Amino acid sequence: MIKKRLFIGVPLPDNVKRKIKKYSENFKQILKANFVQEENYHITLKFLGYCNNEKKIIENLNNITFEAFNVIVQDLGVFPNERVPRILWVGANNFNKFMNLHNVINENLKQLNFEENKKFHPHITIARIKFVKNKEDFKKLIKNKVIFGRIKISSFVLYESVLKPTGPIYKIIKKFSYL
Image (cartoon, rainbow, N blue to C red; front, side, top):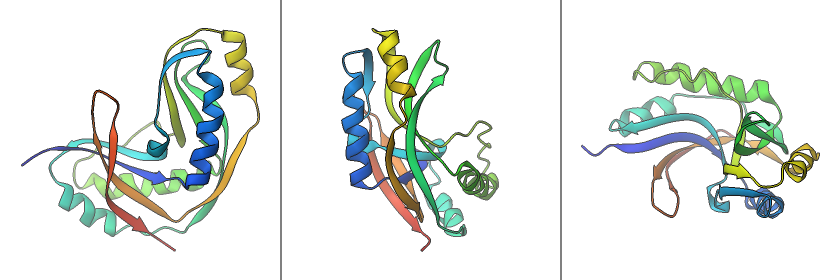
C-alpha cells in the first residue's frame, strides 16, 4: 500500500489568497526565501505525515461535528522568533474556536495512533525564509496592521501534499463541510 503525505487544513477563499499574495510581494526584495504559491495558502489544523490508512482517517473525520465560526485573516508574524525568522505567516483571530476544532480533530484521530500536536497556532505560511536582506524594512512590514479578509470557517479538508522540486502540490482528498 502506498503511503501518502497528508494533512488537515482550512481552505481560503480566492479573494483572501489574492490579498495575501499581493502583500507578500513587498517581501521579495528584502528576503531570500521560498514563497508559497497562492493556490497553496491554507490554515493547517493538523499535519499527519506519511500515512497508508487514508480510508480510516476519512471515516474518523466524518464523525466530527463543529459549529461554523467567523475569523479575520490579519497581520503577520514569524516562527520561531523575529531574531531568527524561518517562517513568515499571516494570522487569523478567533484562536479559541480554532483550538477547539484542532482539539476535536486530535481527539478523534488518537484512536488511529496519531500523536497530538502540542504547539498549535492557526496561521497561513507565506514564505520559508533563508535569510533577511534588510532587517529594518522586514520588521516594519511585519508590524503593519493588515486585514486580508473576513471568512467563515464551515469546512476543513484532508489534503495530500505531493513534494516536487518546484514546491509542493496540494491535492484535496475529501472536504468535510458543516453549514
